[in-house]
Image 1 (spheres, one colour):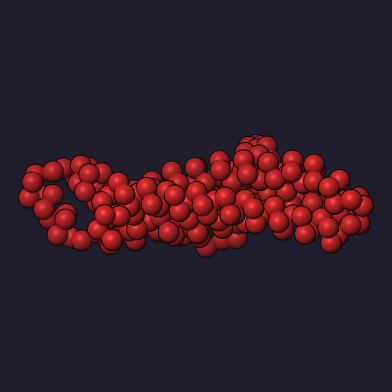
Image 2 (tube, rainbow, N blue to C red):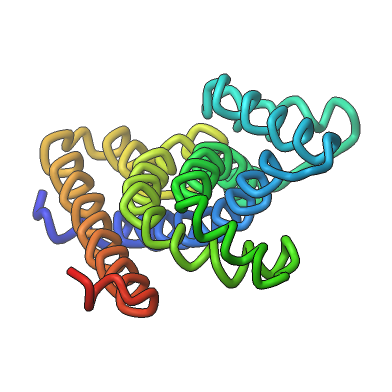
Length: 219
């Protein structure tokens, strides 16, 4: 079989994979900041909820989380489409890991900066967004870049809840044509191409964050 004949179906799957990755990365970023800031909150309830979320989703398998969202929730009357379950599951998972990145980056900011903000009579909220966060963002970018690439690779698991992503399309083609080598080779190359695009994008975001924070000039 001509390898080019395999591409249309695989590209359709790659489009779904790309969409799922982008959507879950955005959702995961929101959860990362919410939980990462929450574990440092002065309010015990926020700290407890954020910590519980992080421990549950870091301490359990992503595959089991996806199965629970797609197969277990309907038992209690909550049915999610494969797309919603996939995006939600990936978002919750990457958000839990990203929360630890946010927490560590916030904690790495020099305490002298915080003391100076307090001396200037800045509120805790202003101190967080105007003093701590701009510096912490620079530290977050490299590990966030790794998490985004990992999220792309983890997205292949959504094929197991019948979402027609790249991994799903590759498996369907392989069963139909028995052309294992060309299909898996093309699938590998497509995943690599998407990962390369994400790496370049994250490097650009990292450089932009450094330039905005003034770190680029200081290097």
